[in-house]
Length: 493
Image (cartoon, rainbow, N blue to C red; front, side, top):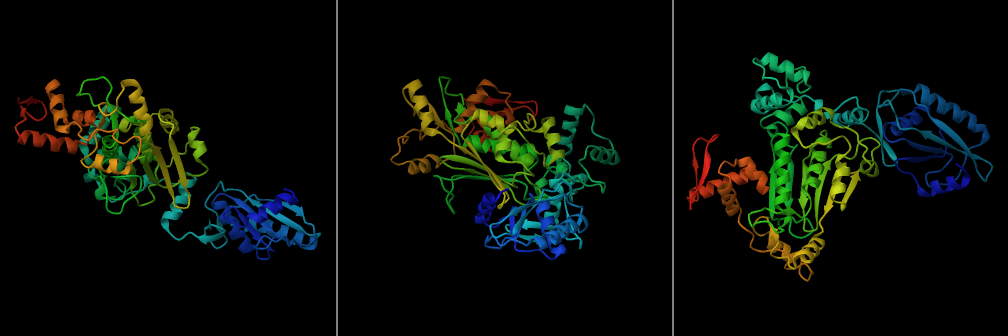
């Protein structure tokens, strides 16, 4: 660094990576400052610079004293010792400034001589004052992971059918016959703690009702009219709870039912293709569920607007990851136990670091925001409805007959009101084909269709399908013949 560079740095003022000191005389205070930098992203301490960026400098007589003080603070007053570097910059007044560089720590957390852990907070520092913050520091250096935390759930909370099916499908192993054998297996799979309770990974992956124990680890979804959040107006809203695979499937169905579909030249019973490929949301939802920060007691939030879809996850990108790095395929596993089981087929996981790239390959109009101050990571998928309309018009010479709205009642009214004067007004049909008629058409072709198959075909939740089937049975449109598991559907003319 030369004098010109130093002047530029001084003009920028203090922040979380840059600090000014006219002089240093207290080694303990300096050690606390260096520990705070090392416990975060590292930074520079400029000695001989006033708080307002003035180039005061220090005398050559004080330089030896300050270098000795820096050495003592870094090697003897911090645990573990830090390897810092210094650089002297000559000033125009004949004095010098010292640039003290503190690297990002590799052996976090760093303590001062009193056993206090310090963190940078803007241009200042503060003590760690909660268990969650301490856990997050250990998590950042892979000494601790949130998904291994024990919960209050005993083995009675395990969804035995779900876990049995997983054991058969992946390990070709039968469900243990005794509770002691079951506990031993869960502990060997890193799904239970030594105290005999499910850890967070075991709870979220295989418990029957994980939201009873951890009600904050869910997805809250809402569809707003227009492009802004409303305090009281919404079109569709739902909270998704249950094991991770159920939360994933129902959240994906919520998104797809609130998208529009291009109906090419297939039959009228064909559900059509979503305006944005489903693979985009598969990748981003898997990413949110597997890599969110489970030390933060908050849900994942899913917002759908006319012009975009937002998936907001608690926790910023871990360690040194940046948006550019994740776009390039770099990754850092925050919840290794959960990711290892997700990769075994629980969710459509296709490889470490490839999800973001795959989503961008399918749809380039995605923006990522890493909010480190707010501790949030947001993926924003922008809709391109006008381009879709142009594509359909060029291919078919019309749009309203080939674009199908699959959203809930009231959706088109809110959409049209937000698009007054737009070239795309009238782009969507206002009387979509009813879901009940689609179900009847599918059951005519396949009387053995299951609720899960219907939900997947129509991009609905299983609960929504069950309601439709109940209504159809009540109106004598269909009836069930035979047992629930082995029977079939009879469509009544």
